[in-house]
Every structure is written in structure tokens, then in C-alpha cells.
Length: 335
Image (cartoon, rainbow, N blue to C red; front, side, top):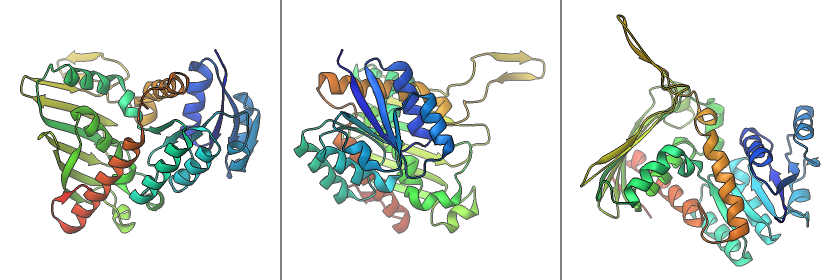
């Protein structure tokens, strides 16, 4: 098996998750270098522990290294499109965390550069590779629930982000709900045509002061006629709430939360089960590993990207339409 040499842009939380997946679960892949302008002594220690040969503050060192074949872009959102362009022009295969950008035209222009460069591209929508959601998708594809009529997605974080994080993230719909926009496309097998959203600030007034919302209910009309419902909250007191259901002409299928164990205690005082796993790193850790395996298989074997250019573009278009619906109080067609 030919070795694939990898470079990573960014050394934060998600970069370290992917590093762990590659070093422990991807045979034939080697991380040579990591670039992060904010690298510290702690970063140096981490890189040494993981056997990473080069740690630099200069992304061009990674992008222009002729030995590196694939680049993972795990830096801040504002850098994703530019680094994707530079990596494509350097002939590197690209895995980029979501979102690629907050601007539709910039996404289109970036994807054109990627296409013309002839490199492989995958966007980081890891929930497509979660065991629960894959089971739902398989049941829909196999026709077990008939024609989809209603898709319901519940996504609630265990705690809100720091309000200072809001501005750079693009807000709840670009940062949090964007996963749900991709998921409703994935589960329904169709595209979103129209959205309507009611939103509020019920968790943290500082989020509202930062210009965002923390609670939302979104209805979506799909091209295949199905209806979707996404509900979000930045704080669920009991933990990370991640559930979905697809109801169709022949039945329904739904997924529940993952927890530490399936043990249920029943006594005279009541029936008690475990709370959901706390947050996304605990809940979706296996999906990140699966995502990386598919990326490297895609590099080696070709075929269709597990999450290609349409996944980079369409969830952002939906998010922009939802933001417009919040602003106007009206249903909005998706571009």
C-alpha cells in the first residue's frame, strides 16, 4: 500500500481528533506536518507525542511541500476557502471542515478551482457517517418506510458557546444547524426548496447582544414533497440531544441518543436511565474516524466524494435562506 503523506492546517480541537483517527486507525497514512499560527509550547509537545515531523506557524510550508499529497483544513472558518484554493492549486487532495465559506459565490468560485485542479475534495459533515443516521438513511434508501413524508431532526447542545465565538462562526445557522441542513438532505434523499423559521433568545441574552439567536424551530419543504422540521437549542440541561425520525407512507424509523450505557434502573422510586453523552466529541467520535477512513479510500480508489462540492454549497444556501426568514418573518425560497 502506497503511503499517503498528510499535512494539517490548524492544531485545535478538531485537528487533534482527526490526528488521532489517522495515527490509530488509518494504515498507510502519515502526518508529516502541522501548521498553526497560534502554536504554543503545548502544541509542540502534542506534535512530538504524535510523531509529527514538522510543526510550523506558516501554512505555506505545508501547502507547498512536494511530499505531501493530502491536506486537512482544520483552521478557523474565515481561512477555509483560501486554504482550499491554495491547496488545490498546489495539487493536494483536500479535506476541509465545514463550512467552506459563508458566501455562496466564494464557495462556487473555490469549487471551480478545485474542479479545474483535478484534485479530490471532501467537506467535513461527519454526521453522515454516524451509525445511527446511517441506519436511518439505509432504511429510507431500501424503501422500508415507503415514500418519506416528514423528517424531524432534534439538535440541542448541552451548553451555549462563548458569545465572543458567535461573530466568527457565522451564528447558529452556519455553525450548529448547518449539520442539520446537511442531515435533512441526507435522510430525505432530496433538496430543500423553501424554509420558514421562528427563532428566539431564550438561553443567554449575551448571544442576542452578539446579534444571534439560541433557540429555533425551522420548517422545510423538500423537492420530493416531504416536509422537514428542525429544532435547535444552545442548551439542553440533560446533555447533548441528537435525535432524528423519518416518517413515511409505509412506516417510520427513528434514532435515539447514545449514552454511556443502556442500563435502566427500576425501583420503587422510579425508572432511571443514563443521560446522553455530553457533547459532540463524545457522541460523534466514531463518525470522525469513519469519515477519515472514507476520505483516504476516496484518495486511493476514486469514485464519488463521500461529501463533495454540493455538500459544501447547499447547506450554506439553506442557512442563508433561514437567516432571511428570521429577518423577514416570512417563508423563503432556497437559492
